Structures are given as C-alpha cells and as structure tokens.
Length: 427
Image (cartoon, rainbow, N blue to C red; front, side, top):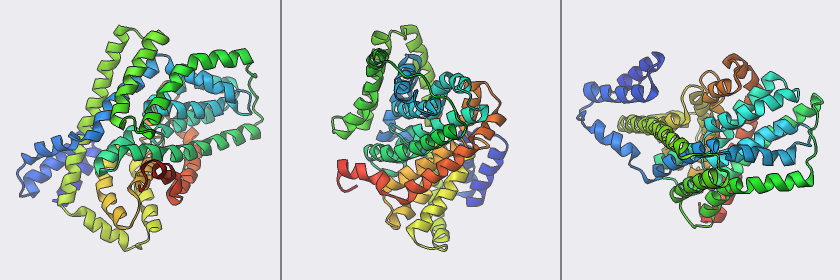
C-alpha cells in the first residue's frame, strides 16, 4: 500500500496536478488496489477531516482579512506605524515590517499581508533609495510573520490536526512572532546604517493626534481578538465571528470605504477561498489517515530514534523536514501530511504540543518565501510588479535571518510557552 500511495502522489505532483487532487486520488488508488478496506470509506474520511470545531473559525478570519484589506483598515495601520518609525534610520523598512506584524495580527494570512502592505510600501522603499532587491525581499519575507502571530490560520489547522488548544497556540504565537519580527527589524536597521539611508520627516504633534484618532478603530481588532481570548471572554472561534462584525462596522460606518456591493463581492471571494482550503484539508486528512493505517508513523519514529533519542536532535530533524516541505507545498498541506507523523513521537519525547506547534508554523512561515514555490514570492511579484526571479534574489538574506529566529524559537521553549502558561496554567 505504501509504495502505491507515495508513488502515485509523487507522479501526480511532478505532473503539476493540484495538491488536493494528488492527495485525494493517491489515497483512493491505494484503497482500491492495495487495501482490504472498502473504497467507500474515503467519503467518511473526507468529511471527518473537516468536521472539527477548531476549523469553524477559519472562514471568519479569512472574511475578516478580506474586509480589512478593502475597507481602509490596513492603510490606517500603516500610517499609524509610520508615526513611530518614520524619523528613525531605516524608517521605511522598519515601517514595512511592523505594519506586516500588525496586519498579520488582523488577518492571519501571509499572502493577504504581502498583498495589502506590499502595494503601498514598495514605492516608498524605492523612493527612499532602498535597493530593488532589498525592498521586494523585505515585503515578501515580512508577510510571513502573519503565519506565526495570532490569529494564524495555519495554527488553527495545526490545532485541528492534533487536538491542541487553539487558544494556547494563539497565545504561544505572540512571543515567537515578536522574536521572528524583531530579527527582521534589527537587520533592516543595520542595513540602513550601512548604506547611510535617509531618515524620514518628524511627525508633528497634530499629525500624531490626527493619525492615531483615525487608526484607533483599526487597532481595536487585535485588542478584541487577543484580549478577548486572553481574558476568557470568548473562544478563538467566537473571536473570529466578532472580528468579522467589527470589521464590517468599522469599514462601512466609521471609515465609509466599503459599500454593500463590495461586501457581497468580498463574501463570494472569501467563500471561494475557504472552499479551496477545506477541500485541501479534507483530502490531506484522508491521506494522513491512510498513512497512519499503514503504520508509517511508527516506522518513521524508529528511523528518527536511530539518530538519537534526544529532543534536541529530534527537533533539528523536524526543522529540516519542515523547511524542505515548505519549499514545495503550502502550510495547510504540510501540516495535514507531516504533523500526524511527527506529533506522536514528539509527545513521546516530552516535547510540549504548543511548542511543537509554534516551531512547525515558524518553519512553514519561512517556507512561504523560500524558492522554488513559496507563495509569497508570487504574491510579492504581482503586488510590486517585478519578476519572480528578482523576488527570489531579494529574499535570500531574509531566509538567513529567519533561520536565526527559528533556532531561538526551537531551542528556547519559554519564548513560546511563557504566555500560555500564564493564561492556561499547566500547558
């Protein structure tokens, strides 16, 4: 069964078959030709893969992200961040990274963050004499932080796949996201100092008051989402629904940049996006179930343990596997395929599920802008109207910086676990 399962999957992926179709067809072929189980069980496993409470929040976060992008919220956050970084050396680069962190905390989507921030900041970076490679590399790489900082859609998928508390994962992503973003901020500052890039103009007190006044409604979204979860007012799923209502209210009635017609179009495009994600999750879940039936996790565990049974060595191997996987497939597919193999052994070695989840997402965040198929490479290319080749050249230094952040997140568990333990006790 295993040779047919992975062989057919490899053939279809090499033939540029869509990932969801490759996962589903390879599972079905293995059931028909190499398994005593009835092929009809495939339908049950597809439905079971998406019949999970944790996934209920995903449609709401996707819809909220699209509303915020079209309703003027992203633009106001960007202007507010510029108040604090514009006068500093490397202000435009620092603004780009901080804006991505803020918008990631609103949207939970890495491609949405690149598209929303990239189109606005790329011309400013070029105007301030940042090199084309650095500018586009920064935008494509900075957007990846949205996978780590809550509400991360990929963390939701991990929680659904492992049964780990999504609330604990969200809180754990805060510390890791700050470390990840801080690594980029330091690099941006050093780059600006080395190349003697200009400072921006100092904002007047009147400008600070005016911009803050306009942005206060936009800044309320992460406060509502994270503050509500942290205080135990509502669950992550309920927070997702609240964020949609709040984003609609602010975009339509406060900023007045969203019409009912635009809202309908956003709802339809969001429904299409979530349908694509759910089909992928369903097929990957069926694939993962058949992997488990074939006892592949146990065999993989034996192979990994042959290299040494220490948690440190295990996490090193996991990082290598996830980094390679992230180069070729998106985060949702990587989690649903690989986490069922990795998770049982990690628990056996005493690795905290929340820590493992944050490590997994940090790896996949790097994969978002790693050649050859990192999605942010193509989104950034489109948003900034440059070739993918130039984007790939630009992200190379940021890959090295992100790997330093990954090492810290991996081997200093308190980065991911300090806040969850404060909120949830014995996490």
